[in-house]
Length: 336
Image 1: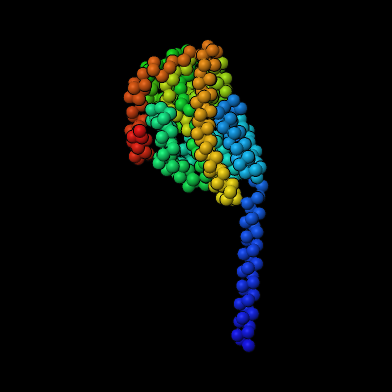
Image 2 (image 1 turned 180 degrees about the horizontal axis):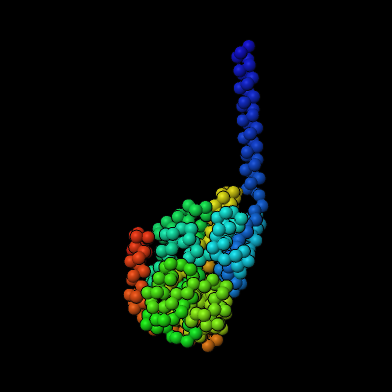
């Protein structure tokens, strides 16, 4: 009798395992076809390479998934500044964002190494660094904070603009009031150049320049053009003082909740559009440079700027950050 009952129980267990397995299999099948909405917020205006890249990235993902994925894009700072949208993505109230490296350093300190002045020689050096071992390492550090990094796009090199002074060497920045972001590296860099570093929130920059609160700023061609800062500045010197990398971030939990096929597409398109967005940005910068010249902006090109003198002037900033970044600085400089 005991053996009969045991056989009955065993049969029931096998049956239930089969039912559960079947249900799980069916659920997985539904997940593969589940519709997904991804909310993405950023601060760039319409005429910026961020916006162009994001729109094309979203379109490519939607097409590759046959409409399974739909994007809701909130540009132009609709959801707040860069720090705010990063926090929203980390919390999961926003799914994705594209931001410059500076604010990311508030969440991953070592990522701020990319903000060091003159750390990159040119765009080839940038791309070899960010697409190689160092870039993978930095993205891994970001991902430890609740994100999934799908690529490091770009805002480009930041140059010094002024209303009156033509900047060709550190002597020309002495005494200038230059707008900066509220970042220790940026402030210390300008102090080392003899400038009065003045942190101002970006929405207030145009008015501050217009009213003479500050004499100038550092900015990429794309941002200067898209925000019409050329209306309140007369000169741009291709100092290339900082390079503005731009991580494409997704909430980690949101990414993991996606069906496997969608995760694969997001990774593939994130990598593909890293290259595409950079190409868009480089092309737009060339066009924007010409347009700024046509609008009367006096541009001092890189070959006419004493870059070596600028590098010498900021050596103290590197000494102050040696312990902070360890061997990362030397590793970046050594990339060929």
